[in-house]
Structure formats: C-alpha cells, structure tokens
Image (tube, rainbow, N blue to C red):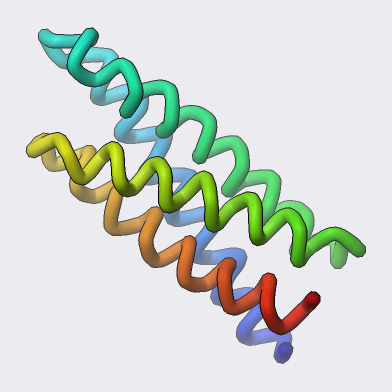
Length: 112
C-alpha cells in the first residue's frame, strides 16, 4: 500500500464524515423526524467511525484493517438508509459513504 493510496482512503473517510455530519444536521431540520430517525442515528455514528478511521490511518495504527472493516460496515449501513430518502443531503451522504466503503474495503484487504 502506497502513501498515496492511504491518503486517498483518509480523504474518502473525511469526505464521508463531512457528508454524514451535513446529513445529520440537515435531517434534524426536516419536518418528519420520525421518518428520518434511522438516518439521523446512522449518519451520526458513521461520521464518528469515519473520523476515527482517518485518525487511525494517519497514526499508522496496528488496527487499520479492523478499523477499516468497521468503517465499511458503518458506511454501507448508512448509505443503505440514506438512499431511502429523497433529500439532497441524504443522497450526497449515501454517495460519499459508498465511496468511503470501497476505499476502506481495499485498505482492509491490503493491510490485513
């Protein structure tokens, strides 16, 4: 794994973290919070996991494969939920999460 590949994964994690945070905040402003309950919860949790994954890669953690595997699972769950909603912020979050999941999947396989 090259430094450039690691940086691309870090960037994907940070992009997903930001998109999740925007979706989280934007969803809280929507009229039907009950409909968005799972989206809100998953967006918040995914943002934290993506941020943690980026930090772990930056530090060169011994647990990058495991952390990236967790990030894949969180991103896939968040994307699946966000794709159910038509809001632009949900769609942007789903797209960023899918990209992050792919980058972390490759990282988890190469590092393991």
